[in-house]
Image (cartoon, rainbow over all chains, first blue to last red; front, side, top):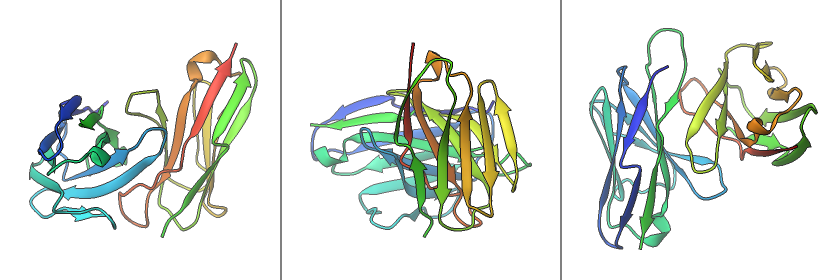
Length: 117
Length: 111
């Protein structure tokens, strides 16, 4: 099946610094990618929809200036957590959909565990 | 706003038994997904259900969709320990590709 990768898989950073997370679709082009956040023992919450070539669409309550999303190509979206704080510590997961054909599958990346100290 | 209710949230069952996880959602949805998540891992796709009455089976898992009742079920047959994981349902929101996740059902299969 289709593969979505994320990098890094795990990152520890100090409070106040910024962290960039990459999401790549390895064997298909993705005009749309999604970014989710999952706190321990909780469900996934959609943060934003990343659209290639245009601005991301953020869900209510998600600060767009704090979580910068760039979808520079059909295979790469990045999420930058700016001025990270301990409450931003979470598991960040991206997903991508080929957007063509009749598959309707959404493929999830392996996730990035962010710890802010 | 699409709301999703999954139950039960916790399920402990013995190997060899059958059980069903329920997923109710509040507004019309084009399709519904079921995912499995192991501790510390990301999501593994199980099923995509696209139409009313859709039924899909893979091994000991079978998923169904009733769009009129806004209900999907995930049925486990003769559970084995390897099925222990958290299972999420996620209907799509309106006509978009955005998914809204249920809270998940943590399944523990005991020998």
